[in-house]
Image (cartoon, rainbow, N blue to C red; front, side, top):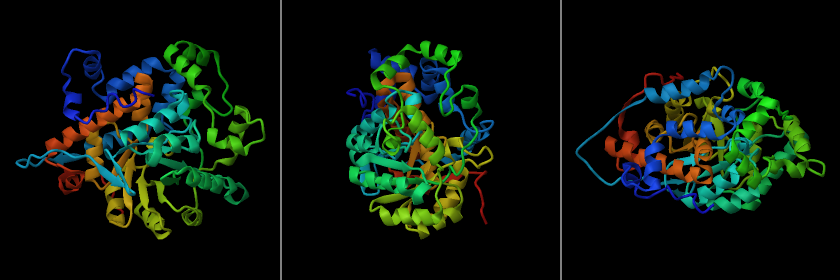
Length: 413
């Protein structure tokens, strides 16, 4: 874990300059954008793992819509007021190095074995939030120990027995010292993900000859698997009959996790949870109002990275209306489609206080192994600082004052 933050330099201009002749400088020139990182990751991880990460639901229209919508947002720079750029932001009482965190991706160990622990350690080292998932490959307790105050937990609903497991997860998160709880709303039913179906990546997993060949053709991924062990639903193991085999745990996940919550359930979570509470997956201002009414502290605007509903709007296109509705009553956060520091600047300008990326950080692990989380964080920070400098915005608070064009923004009136 010692190299996690090696490429995350506080001197962002030096990071992006590409100067020097050493291995680090050459690497920065070869992997200067997330597109470069993506191409390298594709070569290093099994095809089924890459498809799992990159794919959305249906025909991948929503993932494409996220990208096109972010690209369409134009920002007008202001000149004549040069100043040092500062990216620090306070989120729920914790000072973060930048408004960029790591989103949850269920069973992230499929993409890179040991991903959950790597991300948790990186979050604590780099001072950025990490939302570990209910279906992460390390437990709540492990994440909290590694990430410290930067460890958040994404909660899925398990409605059986009046949400007994759901509320035990809430209890465990509190006992472990998790700082923020993020209740997920945008997975009411399981979505159809054709890439995973074609690759046999279903529960229970049934490897094929093609799968075995993919794994054999990915020696670095295999080495990481040997070190980290087979990916498993670690948070769920205590709720199944012992011994908690992977098959038993996977069956429990398949039958019990329903994903979303009613507003009454969110209110019950609010009453049970003393820390900051975020609802994840909001796309309509009326839902943001409902969330505030039951006492949440944050609204995470997200379409699940395009992995739930192919006809859903791009998350960035509903962000301004939700931010306007929420105002100062709760903290507005954003994910779905972030691939650069410029995307982060766009989201902050349109009303978010902080942003999250999932695919970007997992692509970093696929491309660079354990050091990939720090590398991607450094890349995004450098790009954000460059964007802010170009825009004449010395601080994050200056970004929402910019003039922008956002033709596809939703008008909910």
